Every structure is written in structure tokens, then in C-alpha cells.
Image (cartoon, rainbow, N blue to C red):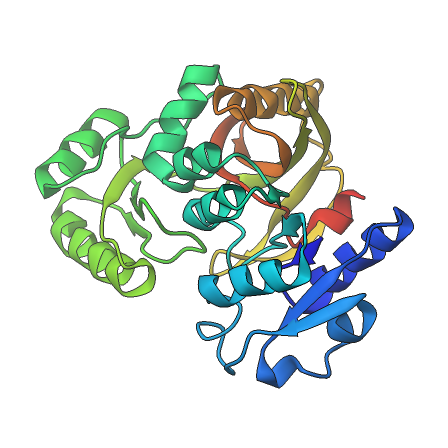
Amino acid sequence: ILIANRGEIAVRVIRAARELGIKTVAVYSELDRNALHVRLADEAYALGGSTAAESYLNTEAILNAIEQSGADGVHPGYGFFSENADFARAITAKGVAWIGPPPEAIDEMGDKVSSRKAALRGGAPIVPGTTEFVTRAQEIIDFGNQFGFPVAIKAAYGGGGRGMKVVQNADDVQAAMDSAQREAKAFFGRDEIYVEKYLTWPRHVEVQIVGDKHGNVVWVSTRDCSAQRRHQKLIEEAPSVGMGDGIEEAMGEAAIKAAKAVGYYNAGTVEFIYQDGEFFFLEMNTRLQVEHPVTE
């Protein structure tokens, strides 16, 4: 297995592979030449360059390392190429196993609007919102009048609170929309947005799922990640407690429905928001998450 990553996650994958008697291949940038993951792997190949773009995000360099090492599987870890469907396709095109979900699932769940459609298709509840991109301020005002303010304008291809603006009334819509689009374009290179009802005091709960290639998906545990600063998670704990009878089980079943809707396999995380006894699908992370050890 070649691990197309560095640091903590590369070390974890190497350790797990070693327990299974599988040989590992590390790749590294110039700056990571003496890093722990390089020393622990059975083989290591230089990608060249010192920035991520020159090394861990350099498809050609990684494909060369696969060729040189004869690796027959690639583990992307998290970050870098882990949610890049084109990279996954480039790996499988070489006849090498991609240790991740199907590229089609990455595509569909990678865009917040199509992921909401997939969740609906699978029968998972979603927050009231648009299932198409919003292009005019009037659409947002009409939505707010129908479902009530506040509403959240969100970047369709974003995350981490970037490109998200909460609007309290119709007068602020145009400015917030412009701001959300500028931010989305700057951070994610795309400025498509959508709108949804803004829940004022929800809990943020995610469900760890694992699927195989025979259509079986199980949920392993919930993680409560409500303690956040600027939409970035600070503390996570498992399981999520105090949600009321049967809520955790229902959330787990909804996560399985969302995953099955896109033919998901491998590890993934389905995120929900929970408020006043109700929960709604938020998004899916089509990779192993940094926080998976909390569940383990």
C-alpha cells in the first residue's frame, strides 16, 4: 500500500498495515525527508518540492511513485487528495486499488446541493432549503418569507464556515449574498451558493459509517462535535448523549440511507444537526475523518 499522505494519518495507516502483514510505501516532500512516516514505511519515494502543491498534490509525482514501487493499493488518508474523484479515477485507471469510496460517491456528496438531493432520495431528513443553486437575491428573500428568517446562505462547494452567511432579514440579503459568493470564490474557486433554514441553537452530531462492496453499510457510533469556534470543531466526544430515546439509532439508520443512496463503500462520516427532538442531514465526508479515533 502506498500512502499518499504524511504525518499522523500516514503513521496510523502504516501501523495498521504492519499488523496485517502488508508492506507499505511512503512518499515525501523535501521538507518531510526525515519525518516519522518515512522512517516507518518499508519503502519511501521522494516527490520533490517543498510545498503541498509541488508534492502531495502532485498527481504525476505520486503516479510515478506507484509505478516505481509496484504498489497495488493507494490509501489517501485525509486532506490532500482524499476527496478528489479525479485522483481516485487516475489510481483505478492504473489497475491499482483505491482505498476509499467510489469516485461517483465523492462527486455526488462533494457538492452540498447534490448531496442534499441524494439524502432526500435515500429517505434521510434534510433541513428545509434549496436543492438548486441560488442565483438571485429575490430567491433568498422568498425562501425567508416562506420558512422564516434567519436563513443561512452557504457555499455549495465549501466547508468550515467559509462562504456561509447568516441573514436575519430581507434587507441584508443582497450584501450577504455578495459576500458569501466572494468568500466562496476566494477559498474554493467556485461561487455557487444555496440557502437553507438557519437553526439557531442546534447540536452538531456526526455518524461514523463503514460500507463494503456488497451493499452492506453499518453505523459504528455517533460523535458530538457541537463545541466549535468559528464553525471549526474544538472538542468531540463519542457517543453523543442526552438526545432523547431512540434518536441516536434513528440517526444511524438515516446515515446508512444516505450512504446507500450513492452506493457508498469504505469509511465515511454523515453529519447531522439536531434541535428540539429533530435531526437533519447536513453533509457527508467521503473519507476517513481526522476524528475517527474518537469513535474507535
